[in-house]
Amino acid sequence: MLFLLSQTTNPYYNLATEEYLLAHKNDDFFYLYRNEPSIIVGKNQNTLSEINYDHVKENEIPVVRRLSGGGAVFHDLGNLNFCFITKYSNREELSFESFTKPIIEVLQTLDVQAEFSGRNDLTIDGKKFSGNAQYHYQDKILHHGTLLFSSNITDLSAALKVKASKFKGKGIKSVKSRVTNISSHLKQEISIEQFVELVSKHVIESSAEIQPYLLSDEDSNNIQTMVNDKYSTWDWVYGKSPEFTIQNEVKYAGGTIEYYIDVDKGIIKQVKLFGDFFGIKDVSEIENALQNIKHTPEDIKTTLKDYALEQYFLNITMDEFIKGFF
Image 1: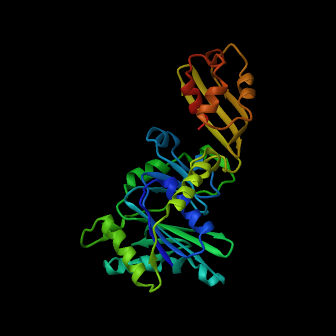
Image 2: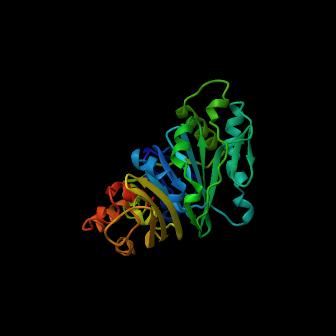
Image 3: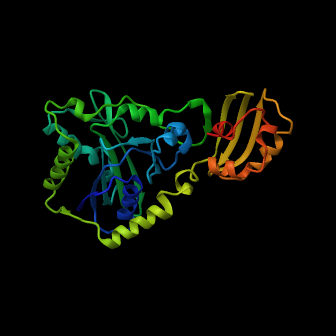
């Protein structure tokens, strides 16, 4: 097994690295990384229904889709991510609990009693500090998990808080849990950098065959290509979302608009607009114009640039109108 400690906190790069090691390297890997504030959504999720879109946009928080299923998670520099990539020959080797055992052992050395809980969590005193997920590729398994060490729980809540009744669709929903930081349970304070070192040392010492690994220039270039072509693209982050419907309402100076929007693979399929607003022209012209375009603020704004919006909705701004689509 090879041990890789990431030298970047770029979430697109770190998630692309996981896939690169899985699909393009023959060795087993233990990989550790931290990300700048970002939201990581599961492979089968509707991205928009998992994030607080206004908060994410205002704070320019990167949103990245990962290979594995499960729910959305918030990363920041107070969170450590661990990843095992290994070949397997039978189902018994795929136990979530077996991959998290080294983490529990490290915490025991710090006199913190953690335990495996449910199908894929680690908890302390019943509160979750680690969520885990897996992805299968040929005869290999990628197991990765979060370790909340000193994360900003307030930011986590704000970034993932979304109105449940707003989205109706087929995406896998995240399960909300009470969370805690590992640092809150330590008898002696240590930094997250020291915690990273403890985890690294424990895994290395527990396997006589593990060796450190540094990415070559070729590795780095290939990973960056994956970032550019996949992980940072709208098609991957939003366009992979399953079919869903948005039901929303916007109140503005001229009245109220109710939005009913069908979206499939990130493309607006149908828009219906109702409300007590006043206007000169028929809103069906706006509804028809917005069909079969990308479900993004930029594409909506571009599509409507030649329409005098105030003739359809008296006293509304473009930004107020677009807000109802997200």
